[in-house]
Length: 114
Length: 110
Image (cartoon, rainbow over all chains, first blue to last red; front, top):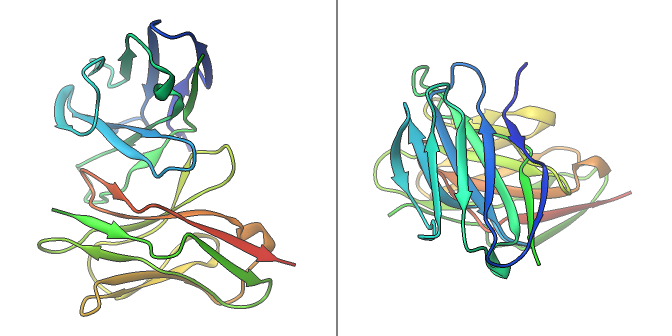
């Protein structure tokens, strides 16, 4: 079965650079979530989208922005990167149409800021 | 506000013995409860969930969890642990907005 796809899988950036992470949800899933997981930490919710509109916002820094496109893929844009942004960034997708309430996670993008 | 707690940072168990990973929650209304597993350098994998219905929920890889409303708990269990079960386990509450516990690292010794 198709799963959530994230690209790139690994990314190395320097401080003050920008990064764009991409997430392709499971087909027919209308909801996308972004999470940040620091080393040894639990995943922290950043932001979510439902039907291409922002549906909820968590602990996402102002330097970050995200959007969901017409094909339901989502991109997380990160600017003025800081060392503390080094983390694993997960995307998850879900559909609200079947009552499952289950998020399916991608493999994550590991971002290292030097 | 919703919250979830995993009181144990680490659980050690011998292969073949039963295992329990604890989780308690706090929600207003009916809870949506989940367990996820994370293997090293891998994404989160869905194990099982409780939305409604039977309090004992069966999931992947032989895991099950028991929903206890009076104790606001949703402990993860397995009758016989395998070395390959060694991983990081996250309890989560919610659905549209999921809040994760801090995680419990399970070590299963051969």
